[in-house]
Image 1 (tube, rainbow, N blue to C red):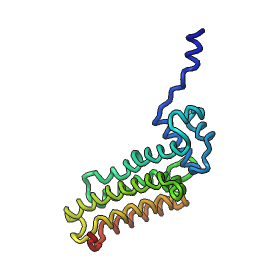
Image 2: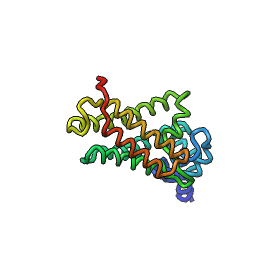
Image 3: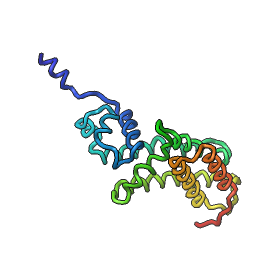
Image 4: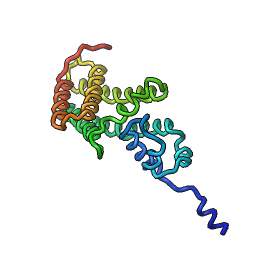
Length: 209
């Protein structure tokens, strides 16, 4: 009987990465403010006490999902820049990978998780704002490194500014995510991405530093 009582009282095992993925989906669907603890509990299959024990409160859980998205999804998108292919192909792969994410979702295109769930909170939450800024810096840095390599290889002009081009490339990604969430058709988004690739790969911008 004692052994049976201990077995029944043992905490339910869970997969932290799976739970974070499920919580991400819940936040992505409705945003941070509109997602209740009951919805997070249902999405993860974990009772509230288990959620708190594993991840902290709702805000702490959201911060962990932001980190997971930055690490895995943004990492996968910008990882396309590391392929040993011409700049045009690398940029095309980045935007295609981004669109694959932004157009996903059982209930329709979801756009970018950070844009959809974190930006509304950044105005009043310094930690969320810092997490977004850090993620943007990583994104800019990955693009900048690729443009510097492209300049050295002669793929873009010697007067091209990798910093400015990196910010433009990131801005195109953000625009694609917003327009995907707003309902732009896939064909239109693909055309926008192609125009962005053409602009970035053929741009000649003054050196700013």
